[in-house]
Image 1 (tube, rainbow, N blue to C red):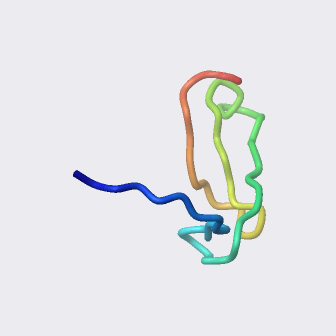
Image 2: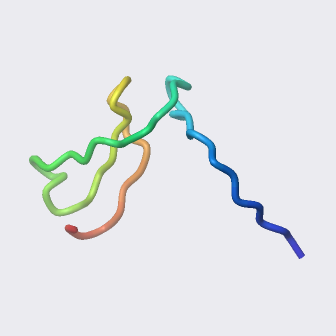
Length: 53
């Protein structure tokens, strides 16, 4: 069994490797129908989900 530990960390962007304390949600064009999240520093996509919030 895998144990999960809670830790207070600040994640880093997988692209620019800078610390990310918040993400930017894109809401224009094709991105209006899907939730797309970008790094605030390099603006590359770091995640997406189907449907609007």
